[in-house]
Length: 93
Length: 212
Image (cartoon, rainbow over all chains, first blue to last red; front, side, top):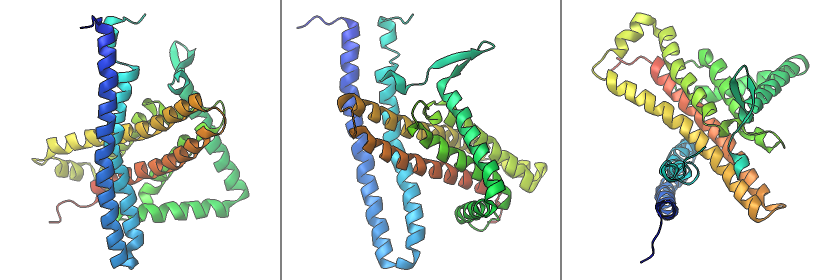
């Protein structure tokens, strides 16, 4: 097999993990948000008089659900731009 | 890509000042100037804005009188609305893409919850409500709410900035503008979300808890 030095190996693993994590972190909130929107629309059709209330609640809860994807993104950003493991092999400064 | 992240531009008496801090000052100057101008030239506009804020905050708070909280929450959302979108001006960096700005705002909200609770119920009354078997859980909940509020705002803003930077690298002229517009929508929405979360936290602190 190839002889990879540790720095390259960590970089490679980081990139692969970042891709996989972003896919998983994007799919899950998308499915759950779709379900939330579906239920809210059903409620709006059934009771149009509370549509405004439902819309406000829907926007807030969608933003809260979106947060999980944002957390995954933040972890990936740390891995890609400020990887604490890579600094062990390429000391800064 | 490097210009997405905040960097130190100069030092004041040994304290590093980042470019996001400079643009925070610009945001503050714009808000103060606009408020001064609007108060002198168009008082009706200010009244409309305050009525709108009062009704929005009152809707979120439910049955509680929103008047004592409108100054704090209103200035929070006005600052965030401008700060999230001021990045579209050339040479000005979005203040909230630095984690310190959302974290500072979230810590202010964290303290404001206790301040408003004490002001509404008196020191001893609020202390009596806090000292329950749920004290530790309440504290953990408050701290995690602070962390999640700051990270949510920061993550949304920095994600837009990075996407714009990547698309700018691939396609130079017009294509990044679409993401800039989407980012402005996100900025407005996140400002609203931040205010709604702060409002619900404060309203849960000031409403009588031992009613059940």
